[in-house]
Length: 238
Length: 286
Ligand SMILES: Nc1ncnc2c1ncn2[C@@H]1O[C@H](COP(=O)(O)OP(=O)(O)O)[C@@H](O)[C@H]1O
Ligand SMILES: [Mg+2]
Image 1: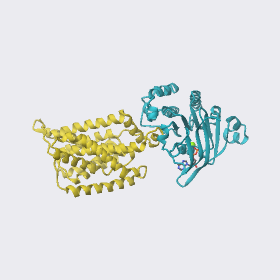
Image 2: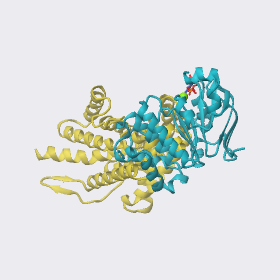
Image 3: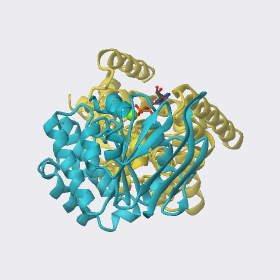
Image 4: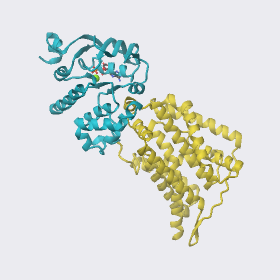
């Protein structure tokens, strides 16, 4: 049995009158990469929002590092090292690259080692160092995604959750981003990915969940999942 | 000829104080999309705070400034939690109505306590005489203080961790929460800061002109004109907007009766809204 870092138990969530997520349970082990795959609209982003606290869960529990954090506001979760790089990047586009990274290190836990983390992010994404004084609205899509991940890393995460990192990016950039994640994994970072590019995500992951219609459809090791015909057809395009 | 130039210069001195007032209003709008209709009451609160403090202590009016900043901040925090907090993220009409009602209560309270008579804070400062024209010392000092405070606000917003967090919340509240910024606390702080700016500008205006409990409306309207000139949600633009408004006032004063000045100002307000809805000095907002 691995050391469980994030334990999501029977999570239910939705928007207004509409329930989107039912009874979702998943686990993320320390030092591992876990992936959620599923069709558009399956509820992956909603699950991440409920985990991080941008929307409040209607039922179930989120246990992080052994503590129940279900009702903590998102900013308090960041203070514990639970960090989300959201879908659509959500950068501070009226601020510079450097200011975005500085804001990433807003929490007390991260502020202590600001310089160390900044060096690490610039080593991982040298392009950000070149553009540190630019407004982030002037960056290309790939650079913006690097900045979004960099900002997440500045928070000094225990668990880094990344939603749809490769959406809308050219294949070269997608490969570059996955190489960066591989480096982070090598450094021992725990990662939870939501990814449309299932091939690359599976290659990096230790464990995967398939979400369909707001529920966990199945789970397993990527190798095992990739041999199942219905999964190959639906998510791997084979 | 020199009379007109002198009138313009004096207008600019006074206008920079209007700019400071508008900064408070535009900061709140820019950060939380709330049009704070208690702005006028806060300006009047600053005026009466100055009156009471100088009356009670006999100190120089300018010595009251730090106390008024602190008091305005505290009042702002209180107003945020009673009138604004629950309206955050709701349609703008909600906060418009709630701050409007609180404003009525505040004006009512003020009227009950002080009536609607004219008040005046005597300030003795030597003026600066050039040719036949004397620039009042109070105007010069008020403009200098407004400039210094505007500079402090700018340095705070761009140079400190909390200031940057305020800008981050203004830019993308959801993302701010995701990087660990306690957005509700930051919103209440920004509102209180805006309120403190309104109070201090009220205090400075009270060193220039006599005032009544009902003066708030006129100065609040001026703040709206200044914001439209300077660009919505842009505190740096507000100072320029205030200076532009003062310039227009200074230019118009020698040529027409005072009652026409407001007509000119609101004509300008409408013209700018139609021609450049983002404001004359608007920074491009991405
Ligand atoms: N902000 C929202 N308000 C209302 N419904 C939403 C919102 N976001 C997503 N949904 C709905 O929730 C369902 C799941 O969406 P989402 O979690 O974004 O799926 P995924 O990330 O798997 O593509 C969809 O039917 C979508 O229309
Ligand atoms: Mg999604």
